[in-house]
Image (cartoon, rainbow, N blue to C red; front, side, top):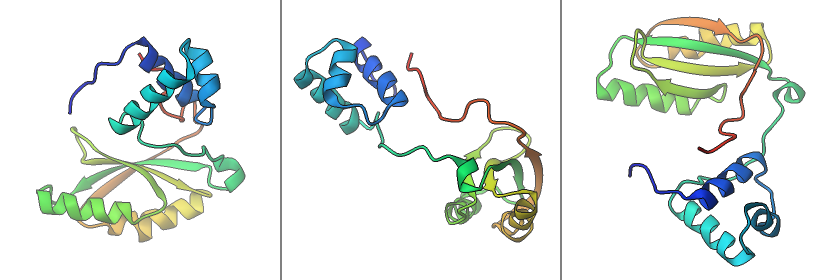
Length: 156
């Protein structure tokens, strides 16, 4: 679909929603300098175009007891399309894998795995990640602190 033409009002809407997804239309309209009706129309357009994919709560992993984060490089034994598809489907069914990215580089995938602690991570690595289809090897990097994790906060 390519890049969309977004004007300064669209970008302002996106910036405000990235910070506060529950902002009212009235407050959003006031913040961007438009009246309520055109702001609402722009918001619906951005949703219809898929620029805004949804709204969700940001959960606190510390309070939920899942603040251990490991990034895992995964090398596959087979990178043909069927193998990638099988791996992707297995990843989607693994709740501890928070993110998975196909990488162009010295390994095939980068996974973000979230668990309660190192012991739980070791079990997930041994019993789940290492047993995903076509996994040849893994390398783990444990995050010590999340500096920025909430995604886009400013739209340029």
